[in-house]
Length: 258
Image (cartoon, rainbow, N blue to C red; front, top):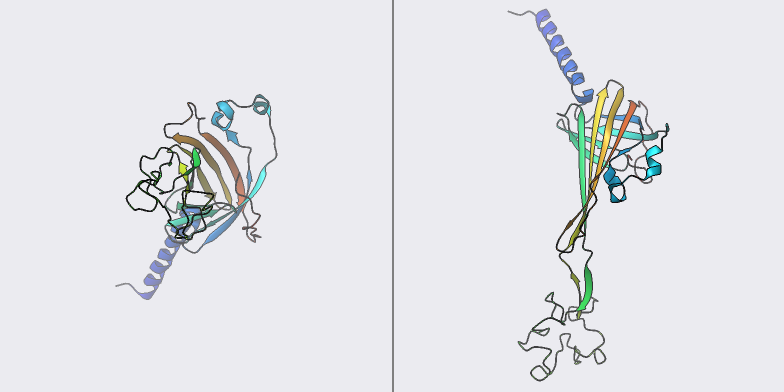
């Protein structure tokens, strides 16, 4: 049987092993912990897709600098499995199981370049100029045939909606918008995508890593341009140290990693 001294010895060894296991994990942090790093970012390395026509500007190919941009990074763990990196302008999620830490984020902005405001009295998405049957008052008669449909009065103001001089404003649903007009949006979409990937290597009180930003413009539809530039891949490396008493300037006015 184990005496009390053996039990104490085993308990102490177990505590030591648990402590070492925590230090050996990514950054030695656990749920509820955080670390603040001050880093210096090197100059960006940009792929040809970052320039108009996929061709770097000749003068920029010869540019060089030894200056670095300063950045404060806040690493914290909401849970034992989730790591979060706050750059002061962007917040990215990662996993504590990654060694080194990796963080990723993505945004997508969609624009419809081909749109027009047209007359669409029955709001069926078809311009009245080409609509074979217009029936704004839903009486079963074609509004464009004044013989069969003598009056169209969707807002009940005793004035014919088809005559803009007689009824200058039609608003049957009382939303403040003119009912006779509608914005027709074409099927062609321009999609702007931003992907950010950050690798963070923690080694005691020092940290290093890289930021990769990929921006891409794509087009979907029949009216897309024949050529779309290649994705812009921008890589920026950094090195820094852990800060014991940080002055966290996150929020309004803080700048994201560039």
